[in-house]
Length: 63
Image (cartoon, rainbow, N blue to C red; front, side):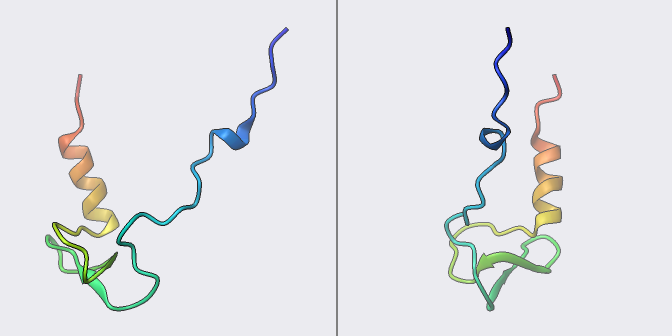
């Protein structure tokens, strides 16, 4: 007998990451200068969702 899979445990919770802004002003992406989802007060490199995804693809392990 197989146990039913609890699908709710597979979904990621909708929790804002530290530094995400709930409204303007938004930090500019360091690569394309488009607005990001992060507040301007966030320290470090801020990337827009597209550049963040592309950077993850470049740095992903290929093997």
